[in-house]
Image 1 (cartoon, one colour):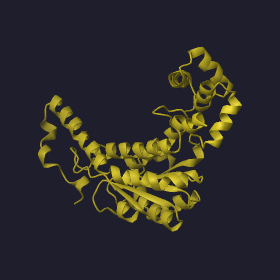
Image 2: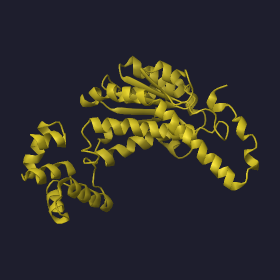
Image 3: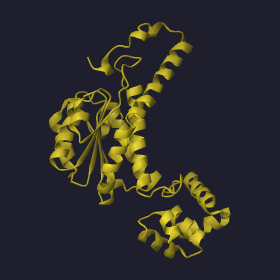
Length: 293
């Protein structure tokens, strides 16, 4: 029996726990998710290193999963645009059962290995793409179908699984095993298995965006200011990085479409917005290199 499906012997009477103890058990069990991701950190780092040149060449991140795993892939993909200005078309999420399965479980969709391959092929996967295959069990047919199609197309495949020696991890070029063990509620991988996947995906994509010069220091300087909250954040980031007052920061941000990177370089070097943008272009988007030039 897979670890993720094995009943946790220490919680055989879970339904009889007092509510406070029940909540504490469920919370405490989540710490194992962090431990599992920490143990897998070298593999996640290897995935970032392997993905970087493909992203620099114009490739896409393609997330594939079913159920909770697939929804976590969707979540990671959609958050890259507002956080890092990563183009929508370069973060693709494939979910067993299609878009509707994000909100309503589509039973049986995860068992279709042929559909997994077909869905992957439908997005015209290429050699510069990175396909992130996510499955708690590590043997979900839909995900395996997509993984094998991705490998055949020459894409980089990264497999995330919660059981040791699982096919999704062993068949991918880079396997990331998040060994979270049995769940407090047996088989409910929306618990710490899902938490570990969320942490791992978040870590992978965030580290990749740092390597792609989307961050200056620890400031998210490539965000999209798409609402009032993010406009205020753009101003705060700019003032923090440059020492400028709020009004000066806002004025320059308005000139460059609230692109924090450009505003930081323009204010720091006391140059025009277009000059700052040109410096950033020549520095491959690195604020640090643009400031040093």
